[in-house]
Image (cartoon, rainbow, N blue to C red):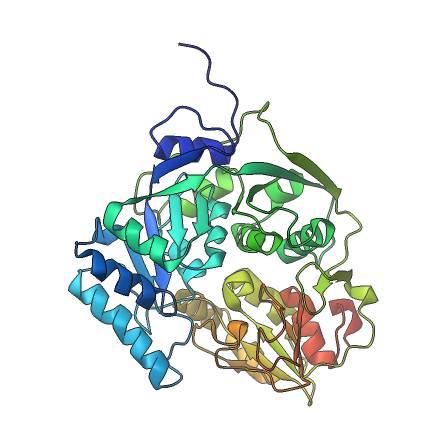
Length: 423
């Protein structure tokens, strides 16, 4: 038998789940799925289609339901949506249904709970499912009807994506984190620059990032049009998974001579914190070039930047300072456990003393759902992942994407500034 051709980490994971030694970009494969995910917006449609099939869930433990977008329910319609999910989870005995009080923002909750592990194939009826690539897994968003079929079959089809390699080198500054790296990359290649490709993130800067920073990077791969984002696993990945992973896992890494569609190399030594201006994640500028942008609201949270490290950074900037009198600062820890830890560390006290409102975990304002919808003409700085027209409220409002340090500093100043710009 001949030597298996070199493969990227994405190819290897898909090959393993398709029962093959090798898959090539462009090939159509049917692959076993380890985890299937839906939320209170996308699950009801999947449930309706699944029930038309008239079968049982292939593996109740593999199906995860997290009502996080409009919960705690904001109105009757959202309450009805959540009830559909709740009733389905009870009817099929899903052990991984997360009710309000246990719930967190799905893409933060699943890794924290050990429900996703390296080497997995994960599909979710939510585009930011790509977050789990930070664990060295293949994770991608699908439509609700595709999810319904996979809940019955335990597998789904994929076209194997080509891979793009992003190598980050240099010594990033003190306020530069994962959000800035991915915003910079998207700014360089555009929102279609990775269309149906795997974005593989490597290099010494990625090696130095915490898991929280890695989750942020992979979370926003879809904003460049990627099929998935992925970081080959290392000792930090294993340290994160050990003690929390609920299943055996396998570490896949790209072969040194694997083929890439393109390789991008960035030296980020002189990179400033980045800000994505309306109305696109690729409309990126250094914070020093933001100009005089007066703001009305700041949101620190979401599946992109609502983790403990993000809250610590925000508290470091906010400590002993006050939110500008004309600004509303909303802070949303992305899981209950992160909320508890933030309480223990005194972060919540810092936020409230500064004049912020702190919420239980919810996607809320990120998608213009609740807990911070914008009115006509209002501007917000947000640590979220999208800033399309009307994303956070009125079509004539504006959203500026930034890291937690810039967001906190801007809340104090009343306009977009770097942390160095606040007194």
